[in-house]
Image (cartoon, rainbow, N blue to C red; front, side, top):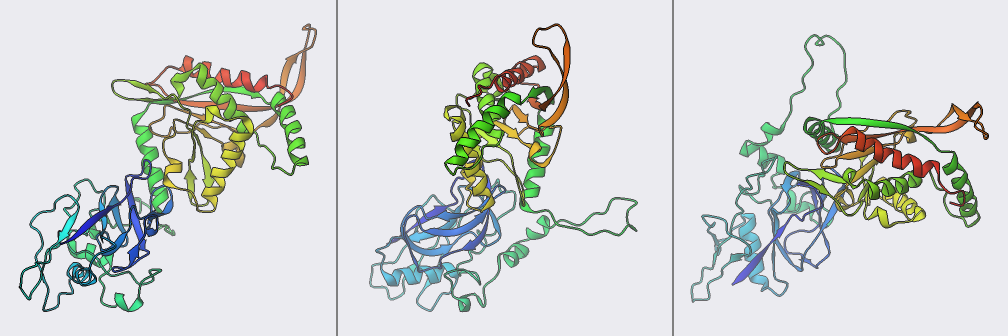
Length: 432
């Protein structure tokens, strides 16, 4: 008896669905644990799915361009030491290429893995092959097509596939169209009333832009959001930063921006005001013990928020290195979905593109987000050293904004946390 093992779409942080974009192996090929099995695109990042175990690929269950819920079956493996004849019959049965010696009898209902392909050991000259179909998931946003007809040949252009094998292959789009689901997913272009005669060009939303729109709309509609603001004088930080950067330049190291200083100050404020590092539920406020700091990064594809875990335990330079490393990974396409999951509070740095006011929308399920605008040289009134008069001086000022979920705490607490950030930055030691 040849036992087949179901291979599932792995969990990837907070990702619920992944679009399968390319198979990297074809049926009959042996796969080692850790080998790249397929490529997927999520609402956060594009990545490869590694094989969770070794085996021989018998069939694809998920099709190219199919959106698959995490945990759903995407392929089936036979053991590495399987009999070649049984493997060949299993592949033929799964792909529908039944010769005269093979009969396929689908199971009336799906059952948990492993599925089985049974070859009788009696004297019968006609082996019977039983292939179990997958039961359709009930929670898929884009209804899958795999339970109607598995696509068991590698797609044209697959890295290790044979072009000839795909000549009579049905595409995922054709399968979805036949099942009636693709039409439901196609969106009609709608022009607002009264604009029918106005010339326009139309650009279809990317997956990331659709995900951003969905997530921000859900956040805005779920949490009553306000932004508390305070002006912060960055004079002390500027002095310390200049000294540190001179030392780093002498060692051939990259300069520090203001962002890691702000991140350190935020972590210190959270220690005093843990309510801002939390998640609001209907019954409880979950205050997270670790500061998993999200850093909003502007990429060519859209806004992404990589997460620096346990940021409260990192030094200034360690935070700076972590920020640079995660940002670079997104820029060069090596970021992983898990790098974007599990954030407990976020810094949104609109100052990097020149914004002078920052009022970010919360990232679900967080209850606070720190907006960092540009640092602007601003005329400020300051008391003289003897306290007898006021002087007008120019200082580097940024108006930090803490957007918060008013269900979780009130504005006074948001301001107390923000003032804690302010005090840390304005009293930064000159030696760094």
